[in-house]
Image (cartoon, rainbow, N blue to C red; front, top):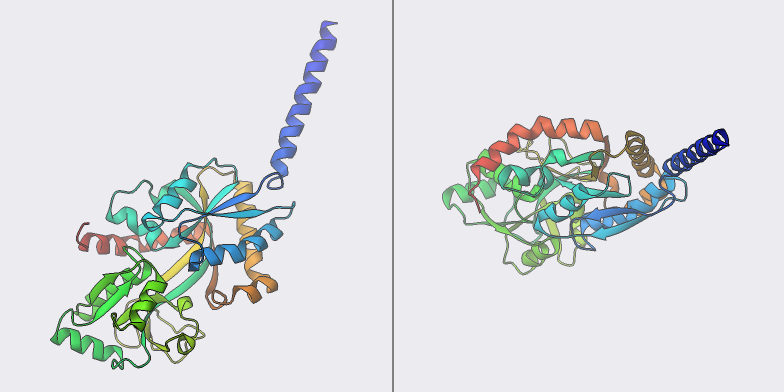
Length: 323
């Protein structure tokens, strides 16, 4: 009788182990994957996530599904912290925006540091651009620099807040040109564009995807320069900062990250699904503004790139006045 009880217990234990293994293998079919976005609905980051998510789910298989959760505020810090604290089971991932994601902890005390998340994959690498009204009297960057050297702060330049690509591009250009733009922080692209339209702002520092067709904006606009070593494919006539003698590059990068300690097999599946989704012809048709800037990079490679650039950004952070 005692042997029968032991055998029954063993069979039950094996059965439970089998159920647990099946449940793990079934990931992610039994619950939706939350994708935490650190900006409000309708913005560039939110739109990217909402368009791409169904295709990631498609390539994950197992009837996977994804739901977007917006947690705006503090330059993305709120959303990053939420992902950091989530269970590392593959059911919570987040969108991270560079350079802000790694720049903020360099500049001030934050509730996270970059070692608190594991990067899954980069999706977009989007060059920063200087934008003005088409009818602006400013003709080129040389004119901007010449005026600022004669009259510092005489031209206003907008950006979307501390640590954003526009902000870092502006700071780097000031240093490279030995000039001083009058920097003004805005809450987003729409606000910067409105300021340009109302002529209360001279130059907006945006991402190229924010102005896919400048002349078709409600008030026609013009791109003065793009911050890269080479020209973006869809901006063949816009000079780069390198062309103009200012070796400054700055890209807005967006991709996915997960809490530390998510099982390696799940991380690999997520990365492969992101890569497959980005190559999906149906997604590329839907991506529109992001399509010219799709630039897949696996999590390990993306992490290495960030570490390679760390010294440059630490120096920028040290040079800025503290809040």
